[in-house]
Each structure stands twice: as structure tokens, then as C-alpha cells.
Length: 531
Image 1 (cartoon, helix red, strand yellow):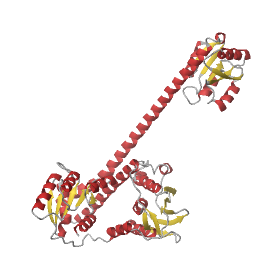
Image 2 (cartoon, helix red, strand yellow; image 1 turned 30 degrees about the horizontal axis):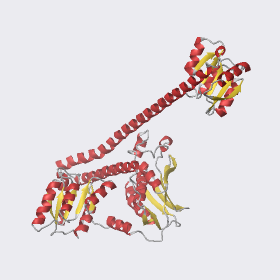
Image 3 (cartoon, one colour; image 1 turned 135 degrees about the vertical axis):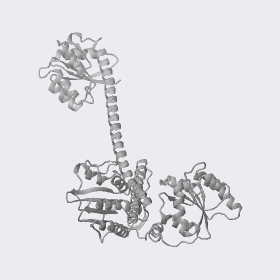
Image 4 (cartoon, one colour; image 1 turned 45 degrees about the vertical axis):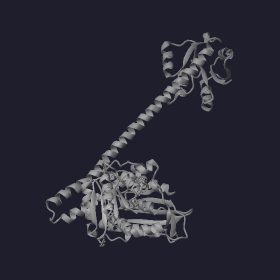
């Protein structure tokens, strides 16, 4: 049987004894009693033992304080007391009783009514009613918190949609506007410059989409880190050399130093490491108007690599710095909004750093500049860079988009439902001399493959859009495999998530090219499967 702990607060020992005797007469519950004569003693006991007290029986008028002061102290920031309270009165006015009931007292009764029949029932009801009130109060608090969180999420979503709308419409404005101007006057003196700016705007759009995809992967916990053995100094050097040209265009100097004690070959994800470093350097260049950007690479104990990126920009306001790694968070001023963009880059970079065993933090910021510190865990390796990493560098660095590729005896089927993409891919492959047939959906693609095979002139390669009407690319690939066709199929898809790429490969495609199409990658992949 549970022992109910009761605190009796009354300056009259006879009244305390009467209450104790009345409760002890209860055959259903066992009681343990704690007696105090003053409000100060009561509050002192509740300060250290409030969790163990089940009920307080409180005299209305004590020598040192009134009951309302004690009730107020027990209640504090809550709307109801943390412990059920029964008020024991001699003579008290109706208004005072009503006030105490409103403040959370569960019940009250006259000292003359303290009997073995009445008090146990009052105690049971008070405890049960208090439990229900606490549950109701906690439910209301939880509902209020949920409502506030929903409103906050709605505000963040609205802010993000406003921001992303601006970020998408800005480059779109340039692309559509320059397209119209070049269409009107294709031989105009500024046509080349307009085309260049259209290209840059398109790249910016692609970067925004990449950020959105990355944050979606992170929130869905599907983003994977793929560590391989790679050359740490080489990654620092090549990345800084790449961004130095952009810095130079703004009249800035970008330099780097690599600690002689830093390891050469380490095991980490070079793609994600480079992504974070590029983001930090791009930010530094974007928000520095004069001076320099310095990248310092070093090592620390326990296989740690440290990269510091310092700029001489205007710095970040303290209130923004505290929230700058939160997705979709932007600064309050227009300058800070420019720094944080759509509020994804730094949030993604910090999460990537953490997934690589490190972190990304602001080391210092002032009106003279900002320093970001990027750390990762990267064990040293005695082996050279992995084959995959070397091949990746080779594929990305040695291809010449102007190289003559002669496939005069080759025939390709392009299955693509969008006329603009049909025209684009045909123009990209036109210099190679390859013959291209078109199919506007998966069903037509299957029919053309079967017909070409029946003529004894099977296609050498198929470029297959995976999202098409009538018959999707996935269904078309499955049908061709079922019919026994072994022509290499390259998936051309706007789905950039890894699981979508895996789905393409599992369906029977031998490779994947994502939209927007990288011309050099398309040529390299096609060459590899045609050779």
C-alpha cells in the first residue's frame, strides 16, 4: 500500500493533531505526516522535499504569513500549485476563499469540520482533482508550445519561400532577359557578354538546386560520406588556385599556407571536403570588397585536419553569427541577407563537417573581417590516392570540350520528351558526327530499338530520359532488358539524389548523367561506352 506524504502547516498543535487523527482513521490509505508551525518552515521543507510531498493541509492564518503568500510561492511560474493544497480555516471571508480557489487551492473547510468521515474524502478528491488539473495544464502548455513551434516553422517557411523565390527569379530574370535581347539582335556588340552572363546565371541556379538537394538529404539522413585515400595538400592547392581567379576579378588576393607537419595522404571524403572549402572561400570572396582572403591548412592531434579561412570583409553581426549555421536563417539587415543568401550554404557545410568527424565554427568576427574554422577527422594513410579519386581528378581535369570526337559510324537513340532538351543534346553531340534518332517517350524508344535491331543495325548507345509520358524511362529500360537487348543505356535525369541514381542503375542503365547536362561529362560518358 502506498504511503501518502502529508505536510500539515498550522501554528496550533491541537489542530494539527486533529487533522492527523482524522486521516489515520482512513482504512484505504496509509499516511506519513510532516508538521510545521510557520510559513517559513513550510516553504523551507517544500524547497527540498516538494517532489515527495503528496498533499499540503494549510492553515489560512499563520503567525508569520497568510496562506495566500505560501500558495503564491508554491505556485510560482505555474498557473496551479505543484502540490495539491487544502485550506484549513477558522473564519475567512467569501472573497478571500474565492481568490485562493482561483489561485489553485483544491479545497477548503472549517477546522470545526475536521472529522474522520470528511477529511479523508476531501484529501482523496483534492489529490485526484489536482492530478487532472496538472494534466490539463501540461496538455495546454504542450499545445501552446506546439502551436508556437508551428507558427515559427510557418514563419521560417514563408521567409524561405520569399528568399528562394528571390534567389531563383534573379538569375531567371537575367537568363530570360538576355535571351530576348540576343534573339532580337544576335549580332549585337554585347551578344557575347550577354551569353556569358546567361551561363553564369544558369550556374547560379544549379548551385541553388544543389543546396536544396543537399539539405533535403541531410534532413532525411540519406546523405552519405564516402572516405577514400586522397592528397590533402593537393586538394587545398587546387581549390585555392581555382578560386584565386575569382578573387582576382574583384581585386582581391587569395593565398594559402599548408603546415609542413600536415600529412600528405589522408583518408576522407575529398568531394565533401572540397565542397565545404569552396563554400567558405566563395563566401569570403563575395563579402570582401578590399584586402585579402587567407586559407591556412594544418593538422592537430588524433588525426584532425584544420582549415582556417580569414577574410578582411565587414564581419557578421553578433545576433546573426549566433544563428548563421541554422538552415534558412538570414540576417536582419540587407547586407547580412546578402551574406547568408538563401540560408543553406553554411548550414550544409557545418553538417558536412560534423559528418566527417569535425565541425565548422566562427572563430572571430569584427568590422575588420571574419575567420571560419573547419575541422575534419582524416586518418593518415601510407597508400597513395585511391584509383577512384585519381580517376575522378583525371575525368574532371583532362577533358577538352573542344576536342574533336569522331563517331561517324555510330548511331545513338535519344529518348527525351522535351523539345528544348532534344535540340540541346543534338547540338552538343553534333560536332562528333554521330547519327542521332529521336524518341519522344519510352514506348516509341522501345519500338525504335526493336525495329533497328530487326534491320540488323542496332543502336550503339541509348540516351534515356527517365521521366517521360506514356512509358517512363525506367519502364522502357526494363522492357528492353526483358526483350534481351544489351545496348548500353545512359540515364539522363533531373533526379540528382543518390537513391534515384541507384534506381537507374538497378533498372538496367550502365551510367547516369544528371540535368542540367554537363557537356564534358556527357561526352566522356558517351565515349567510354562507345569505345
